[in-house]
Image (cartoon, rainbow, N blue to C red; front, side, top):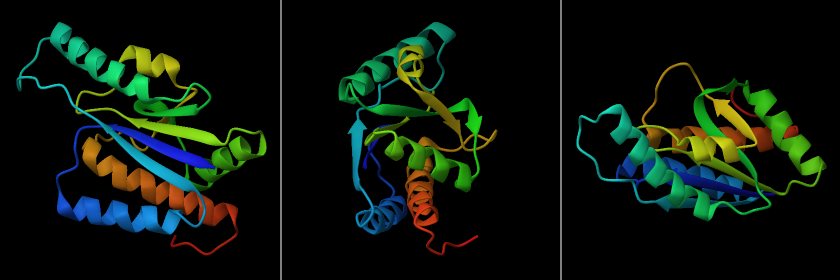
Length: 159
């Protein structure tokens, strides 16, 4: 299986980079994984609703250019379905079983994802009703994908 994670913005925090590097290294024995960063749209701290939509649309255009046409797209969105680790593992297993070898996860910027990106998504996944920094979500997602592969292989994982 080929896993891509398309994400908005450059990762600056060393501790997050180290965690992501650790899990991508672990994942390499199960799957090919690629993290694709697209530039975030520069915007003032306070935005009107129209300006927020404009920022998300520009970031969305950058994201959609990177999405392979044959990929199964899972957008991380607060309005998405919440799943347990076992349910995510089952989702990835079913995709592999039914010939969807390219899975692309999308993490939006600080304002979320554009309506165009959400329309392109085959699934929407929420990790919580809480809001997390989009940079931290990269680490959480990579860890959960790694955990999913461990579950699917019947290998031990930390509960």
